[in-house]
Figure 1 (cartoon, rainbow, N blue to C red):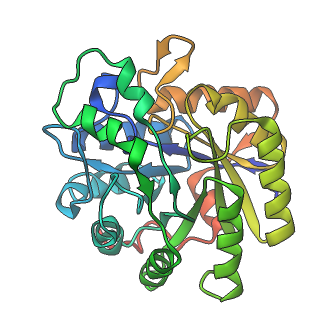
Figure 2 (figure 1 turned 180 degrees about the vertical axis):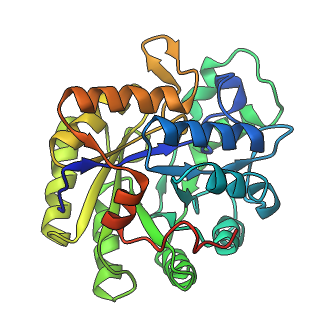
Length: 310
C-alpha cells in the first residue's frame, strides 16, 4: 500500500441508499447538492463523490441534464476533485449508469468491483411516514435485489471511461472484489496507482469488524503491493471508528451523507461538511495532515479539474 503523510478525505454527498424521509438534511436539488459539495471541500474534503436526484422527489437519477445543473457550479466554486457514480440508483441499466460519467468525463468515477446481494430494506421499517411514494417500495425491494456488476459490465465501464482519461475509485464490498480488480490489472485494463475504497457494513457485503479491515488490507497488500492507496467507508454508526482505523493503518477516509446520516448517537448530521469537519478534527488531533485537492490529484494521478467534459 502506498502511504503518504497526507490523508485524503472523500465525501459522498447524497448517494442512492438514503431517501429524503430519513433526514431533512440530505441534499436533493441541484442547488443543495452543489452547496453541500462546496462546503464539504471547504471543510477539508479533497474529493466529492456525487450522485444526482430528481429535484421534485429525491429519487436517484443519472440524467446528465440534472448533473449539468450542479457539476459546473461545483467546479467553479471550489478545487475539489469530482467523482461521479457509476453505481447510480438501484436497478438501473448499464447504459443509464454510465451515461453521466461518459458525458461529464470527470477526474474520477466510482466502479463497483463485483455483483452481490445488497439489502437496505431495514431502513424502511424505521420510517413512520414517507414523503414520497417511491421510497418505501425502493427500500423494501432490496430483499430480492442483486447489485449487478458482472465482468462484462466492469470491463465495459473501465474501457469507456478510461478513453476519457477518467480514473477510478474501485469500490470493494468484499474480499472477492479485490481479486476481481487484480484480474483486470493483470489484463492491463487499469494502471496504478489504484484508489481502492474498501466498504464495510452493507448487508450482503463484508461486515464492519476491525478484523475484516485488517484482512482486506492484507489481501490488497498481497495483490497490489505498493501500487494502491487504501480508503475506507463504514456504513452508518461504523463510519468514524473504521475510517479512523484506516488512517492509523496508513490509509485514507470517506465520510458523507451517502454512507451515514448521523454525527453522533441520535444526532443527525446537519450537512456533509459537519461530517468532514468531525473526521478532520479527529485526524488532526491524531497529528495527521489533510491532503488538499491538488495534493490528492498528484497522489492519484488524475488529469486535472479543467480536463473534464463539463
